[in-house]
Image (cartoon, rainbow over all chains, first blue to last red; front, side, top):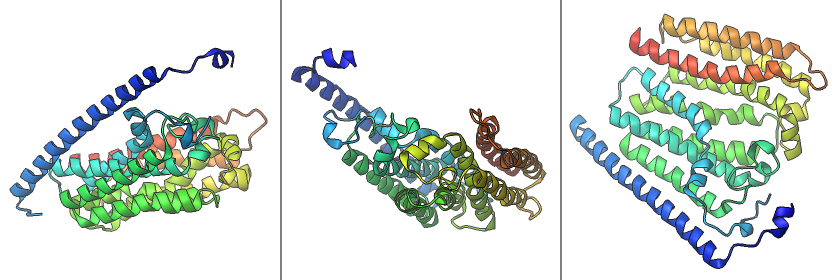
Length: 55
Length: 300
């Protein structure tokens, strides 16, 4: 409780840095997931062609 | 603790989105879905099998996210759930809603184009059932919430089976029934030792509304048809002796623990050891019985 009282709020510059760091990490994760999705769609397409399924 | 979206000023971390999908619950969903798929009489190509399981996992994650979006106020009142992203103020509600709806749509579209219509329909029904029937309609209104809502968690083996075969026969219905009937004793055993938490949050769990005595009897009652469902596939000729014997032994142990919980009365400052043991064993039970199903199909 005492810590809360004496804690100073983060400066706008610090907060901007935290926001940017989070956005960067989210963008990285999203890029990796999209890359994996492309690979998965490619693999599904190849399998469907091999199995003779057009859909 | 605050649940107000207005107090959230920072964007959520990707780990919070992952937490929103309830990864631990997903483990059991993925496992039973995989077992249903591997137990099917028609083998599925590994790439398509992986895709089907991925869709089941994403669908379960979407349902979990939407559940947390709707229940942020309840989660804030319970110790067990207070640290989730929404009640802890690490994420705003709108992000959770968009994430849940987006993930649900993605899982269904991928399931339809990569696998088949039957699996897509059952996946859609399970997501909608969990969100609308269990979370929004039943959970805050009736102590039978997990009995009916338990159906949502029982769909994965049926989805796995449908992904492999394209249809649903009696065997996946039995697997569905097994998990459906397993859910009440599993959750009520938990509810007996976290009763205060549910009562504080105003969730009408059976021990809170009907009392401990009635809950214990209900645990015993639901265990009997569950055991019959687990025993049925072998005599019906759907599985071999490996599954039959494993299911019989594990169900016998489950029944013994359930009876012990059903006939006892808790004392003041009771450590609720039999209830905790039944809860832990119920998770092991499902893993071993479904694991035996796959071993029986592939190695017998």
